[in-house]
Length: 104
Image (tube, rainbow, N blue to C red; front, side):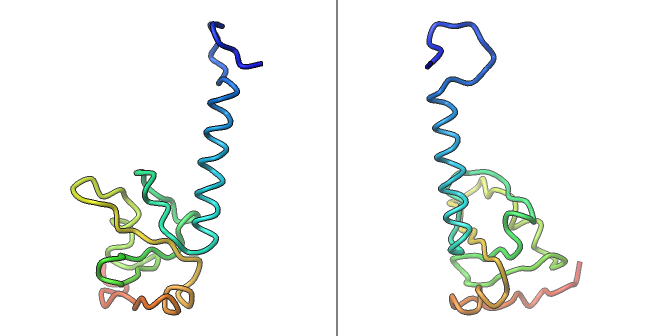
């Protein structure tokens, strides 16, 4: 049942399917180490353990000075975040580790 016309706080079938599709796309993108950033939201460490910048081809790991900033949506310009599951995956994709390292 679609729930049109019903005054209900429950999501409609269309809303549930749209959210499911969004979650599947995010999971797919993360599984192959691509940016899910086009959805315009902040990431968590669990979703994006290694985050790279597609313009500079530099990646950041938890504890790096800029890691937290990179997890947040960039509201000033296009989103250039790329998520990876490991440093090895980032390096295989042509990224290098941030020189900022653990300096906070």
